[in-house]
Image 1: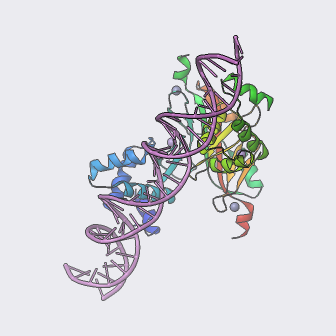
Image 2 (image 1 turned 180 degrees about the vertical axis):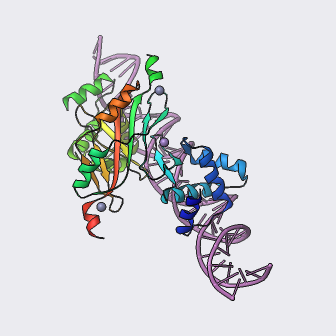
Image 3 (image 1 turned 120 degrees about the horizontal axis):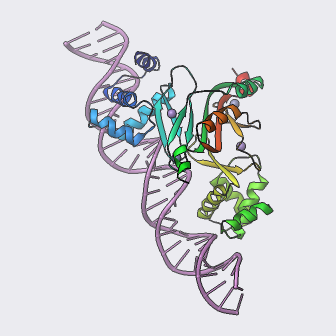
Amino acid sequence: MNSIKEKLKDSNYRITGQRAAILEVMMDNQGKHLSAEEVLYKAREKMPNIGMATVYRTLDKLASIEVLYKTMFDEGRYRYELCDEGMHQHHHIICPSCGNITEMEDDLLNSLEQKIESKGYEIIDHDLKFYAYCPECRNKE
Amino acid sequence: MNSIKEKLKDSNYRITGQRAAILEVMMDNQGKHLSAEEVLYKAREKMPNIGMATVYRTLDKLASIEVLYKTMFDEGRYRYELCDEGMHQHHHIICPSCGNITEMEDDLLNSLEQKIESKGYEIIDHDLKFYAYCPECRNKE
DNA sequence: AGGAAACTGATAATGATTATCAATAATAGT
DNA sequence: ACTATTATTGATAATCATTATCAGTTTCCT
Ligand SMILES: [Mn+2]
Ligand SMILES: [Mn+2]
Ligand SMILES: [Zn+2]
Ligand SMILES: [Zn+2]
């Protein structure tokens, strides 16, 4: 949280009550993937007058300084979650039947990344989604 | 193209002039990632009265029977391309500086997929994007 | 050919995100 | 603490991609 405030200051971003509230929401919900609307409602519990535009602006700013990931899980809206400290984004497994999202902590993309870097690219991050029926949904068949 | 028509019939989809035109556009542009709007304009060269709604409907139908991939490259709109026959979607490398998209033919996700399947999932497909500065953009620094 | 069912284009509606702008609040320097 | 500068805010309107509606048309099976 301290390093987050430093990141904000480094980018000339001021620390306002609204931003603190949104950060709190994201930290209270680690592991979840929240939409902007969900963040708005949760933030209003701490700060009733916060507006939608501020939520969007803040989420985007926090994503731009790598405090949050901003991911689209194929439903036409972005979802946000706290970044993993110091590593690339973890992978997601999405069940096309029930919609549940599971996380995968292992990276295991080294051979692919080596191949890409050997062609002269400089990798910043990656985004890997698996579409897979989850064990529960498979049992229902 | 024959197997595509069979896939359409199997799903009770009729083969109309509009759909043929859209399929032609996608085949004329293999390797490209077209937005619905781009498909509309190219399809109108073959069939001037085709409407936007038909393009959206057709692209979605073709994606649902695995003739097309529908992918969002973080610009707020979907893009479509012909599927690779009989294999999972290839990977994409996106340059955050110039926006160019490169393809990667190697799959190389076996160890990850094994791990997921050993937990009881049934993998349908995956979607892997690398964000990486391309060789050209790196030279400009 | 005949008829059920699928399809079409024009248009309106939706829904997420972004832009605008006047009022307010956070910081840096005194 | 006071002030000037500059960033930020909330309300609102605007944008833009995608979907829904619906009456008229086309496909395709028998
Ligand atoms: Mn996650
Ligand atoms: Mn591709
Ligand atoms: Zn499931
Ligand atoms: Zn580039």
